[in-house]
Amino acid sequence: MTGWLTPLYGGGYWVAVRQLAAVYYVTGVVLHYVVPAVLPVKSVQKGERRKGQVTAEALQSIGPLLVKAGVWTLVEQLQQRGYTKLYTGWPPDAWQALYMLLSVVALDYLHDAWFYWTHRLLHWRPLYIHVHALHHTSTVPTAFTGYSFHVAEAALVFANEVLVCFLLPLHVGLHRAYHLFTTVIHQGGHAGYEVAPFLPTLEQLVSLAIVGPRPCGALNTVRHHDMHHRFPRSHYSLYMTHWDRICGTEHPKYQADVTAHFASGAGAVGRGGQASGAAQQQQRHGVAG
Image (cartoon, rainbow, N blue to C red; front, side, top):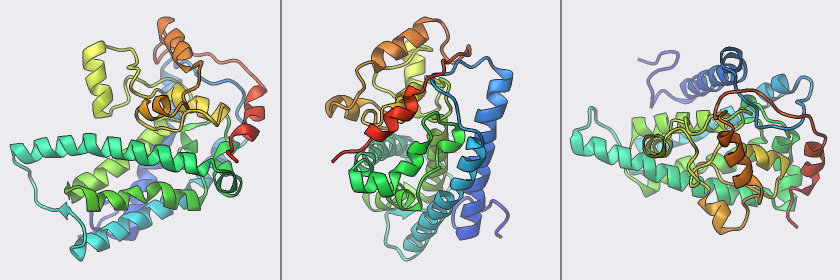
């Protein structure tokens, strides 16, 4: 039986819309309003948010959410017709559970690669001017900036959620849950205060267990993507930093800035941030000829 938010997978388009809307807007409220109200979070941003920015971004996110729900509906149809490598069956045995865990790591690396290269494509001048510039109107992002972009960008960015169905055997529930979770990751990366290393990806959890509550150089921080909104020719990746380092798109001040932030003892706590007009000036330099 189809409920308001159930089943997790296979409920059709409007169930997918409601799942995405619930996750996106609840996460946005928690990250933007609740966490700063109950924890002394320290901003990694410079500049001031525009009046009405949160409302505008929340509304602009509706289109991409509808596109993503459409992508999920396409995946359901393809799977039902036997065209994908998705599979059903629950609960998994021990080996299947281990495979699902490793699948999440594989999805992280695939998603990160897709995001990096499509993101660079979106900074090609024609696409930037007509599509991606909408996202970059937010030079001081909020959690609602996560999906505040053009619907054409949404179609490109979310296409990997179809492609992975042909690359890896994935449980249908894992496919849906993982791509719901990426919604949270996109929002966390725009929150404006440091969440790393407590972003609950497998890689961040491993880093937290090994090196403790300080950032791992191989993994992104909130500052990493926040700097992209101020310096649009730097930092195109999502989860990891290797593509930016290999391709020379890591900002030269990033490592020093993130080290200083955590060396201050702030980590994900404390609150600060200085006003600056430079952020608005950086936007015009975010395109490639």
